[in-house]
Length: 298
Image 1 (cartoon, rainbow, N blue to C red):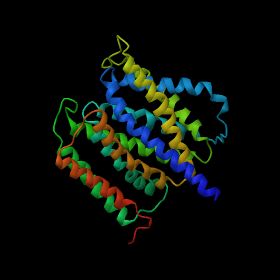
Image 2 (tube, helix red, strand yellow):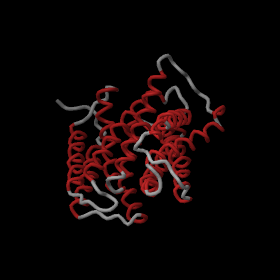
Image 3 (cartoon, rainbow, N blue to C red):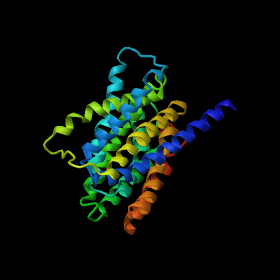
Image 4 (tube, rainbow, N blue to C red):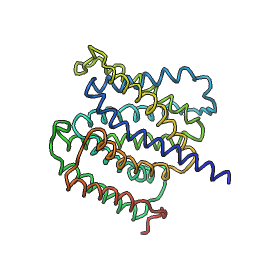
């Protein structure tokens, strides 16, 4: 009974996390219309870091082992580091709805990475699902047409795929660290590394620093910093620490559907019929990949 209750809390935490993550695609599109993407990403990391400084002493249960700093650094550089670089660039070229569909590939990428890094086996059914979802993602990008909000969707979707590669590195490393670290401590480390990672990028010649402070843009950055960077990552890290990585990563499958809904509701985004068909391929591939059998039959 206790185990069921713990799983229930983990599932609820993961569900809320993916809802917040799906909303972040919409929030980023709003914020990028008002501020340079690097300014937005640094702002959300800085706000999250300030919040964590207020509760730093309360984050305990830390069992540091020699060499863990390498894993912690790698985790933070993967995400939020390069992950947000790719995602920020992606959303300047493609719609939030399409970027959300590319997220459907993440659980499959995690499964493949776990095969080589954690020694987990993958069934042929999972590999077949991965291939189907990948074809769907390629068709989704190929069928996209340029619009005012998505000037180069194929490039944008590829950049979002690269963001998913970075997210895979984060999740695999996170699973190695959760037995020894408080999930909220790991979230704090991510925020700190993200702040230091993005601060020098503000001074690149290509970065446009704000000359005025749009209230909507500022509130969006605050939302991203508190509700997405702290709450979403903290809840996901908590859920990941309680259940297997394969189950936790499966919740990412909800992001494409939620993002399509938010994009339709708030940004009035629409896909053409080929893209909707491709989206179904992605979802079908992800569903097919959810095989409880993990051994590959030779």
